[in-house]
Length: 328
Ligand code: ATP
Ligand code: FE2
Image 1 (cartoon, protein in one colour):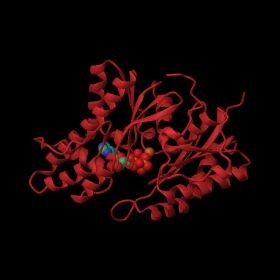
Image 2 (cartoon, helix red, strand yellow):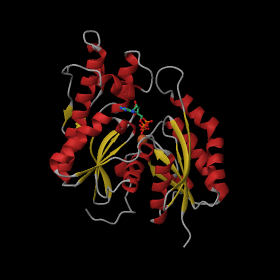
Image 3 (tube, rainbow, N blue to C red):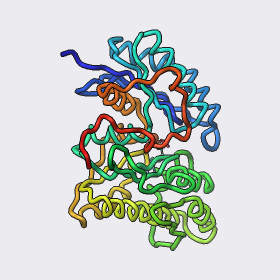
């Protein structure tokens, strides 16, 4: 039987990425990253970046990976509207010209599935932490349910916002981590967990205020300790509630060594497994979109042109997980 190959396009925010994936591996992946000249992401500028680079990114991918494609998968949401629309337009045009089906995928679900593919995780509680997103998810009765999430901004954006306010270059997360390593004390900051949800906006503002009276490394350290403790608390409660035996980390903030350490300690204490995929599969990448496209394609899922509209607020629990057959 010949292998199924899927072309996947990702472009929800900074990263424009195309990849071809088959059942065995990632065949090829090409990425172009938008870098704003000042401040944070400008959605229309990012979309223009994607429009300018998509021909080259897709062209390179098809040149290296071959044109023998069974379907075109794309990120239908969540993400920035202008970016999503640019990439969806390209996906539709490619599917039509190659005469293959189109598959619109949920970006958050793709993070989970790529983690299940690239680590031994089978049925984890997933902590997905990126710039715009912060969610605790787990599979239950046919859907990836959101057990907890941010009530305002994502942890990555909170770190970036704080970093920018104290003059650190973008992206702020790695800089905050580096400075935190030089801290000598912990400063209490607002810890906001409401039920199973959390919030980071007040923490970012309070940390910014704190830099007037305390050394920057101490504030960076305290920011991390507070924010990560909130994330670990909610993840642990989701584990306790679902009785799952695995935790999976996803998203660009998952690169942070202290967050990994704290999650690792929690998992060890509970006697469960903790999985972290290779870095290239943690941040936004085309391979995860192609891979989820492959799972959905095999399960018979197709997106008609009339259903291919992007959805900037697409929630993972709107997608019926028809490709998994466990009943847990
Ligand atoms: P999404 O569209 O899913 O929100 P994104 O565009 O924010 O994704 P990612 O690559 O998933 O992209 O995550 C980027 C975020 O990760 C940035 O906010 C960045 O500051 C943060 N980040 C990267 N490395 C680290 C680190 N070592 N510690 C903390 N945060 C980090
Ligand atoms: Fe993401």
